[in-house]
Length: 393
Image 1 (cartoon, rainbow, N blue to C red):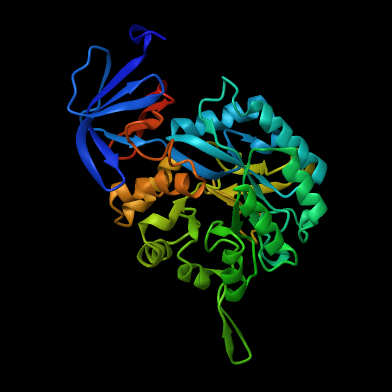
Image 2: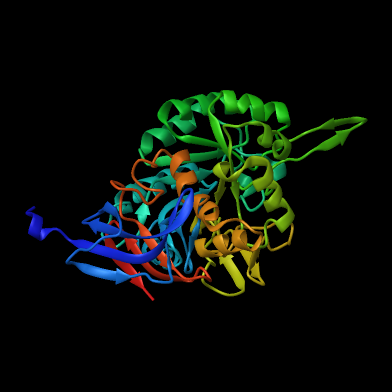
């Protein structure tokens, strides 16, 4: 490509959000990368971002769908519709998430994802797949279909791993027989093993970290806490996770799953660098109240949306959220989180966990030009993915 053929975009006068500060400056994009940061003059397409925040694109590592579609539908239509909704709310990278299902359907879905991942009609980066189950605790199943929950079976999980190179994360209950061995296998392959939907006691958590587990799936949602057995107190995941420096904690900061007190506790105890905001959004994101399906469409597994909150139909537990990424940032700002720290929880932190931080996750020369512009209300005005303007309000 000749120099004159390069596509350039200059973003001027924006309040650029870096991991450690906010600074009014300019950003020059050439093709798909950030090439200069500073006070710049260039003869090219220019976006005046005066009065707006300029942020790295948000990264959602736990999302089941949106816009009426669950990712497990496994079609291009479903992926395009759901990712378009989330992109318009600031997510430029997404990790589609499954729920436990039939083994053959899970393998089928992974093959479909492999074909869809880099399709030109998908407006965001699809980083890979997050498998939520089936190796979970029945006592902490939440919205996971109970008929598929089981202990890890080596022959089965090796077959799943062989079927796709795009598995990025796997949520597992570490107290199950065979879970540590699975953790070792995932760590060896560079796949994030995450503690979740689990009745683990504290010693299970500490042992899991030794076997490569590096995150907790939606902290305080289907994660065990302290119980008293006779006179003795037995801490669970919620207590042990704070003691393990290597563990990242997911937070569904939709304003419903976690009260402000718990969000503040997470920030105060764990710090800004080890919390990852996730939507855990389901197909109902972008819609109103009603009944929606979750997971494999053949399972007809329903969840109820009431007052913008997802529940199991019997109201026994939450069932994912209807949030988009921008809502999570607004929630964190409401509890007093500095904006650059709130953004880091959904950009650099997930990028580091999944080893994408050399490419995305912060505004830095040499990184991919995934950039969003939003106003004081965190209302997204423009979205740039891979150097291309994908959305303009």
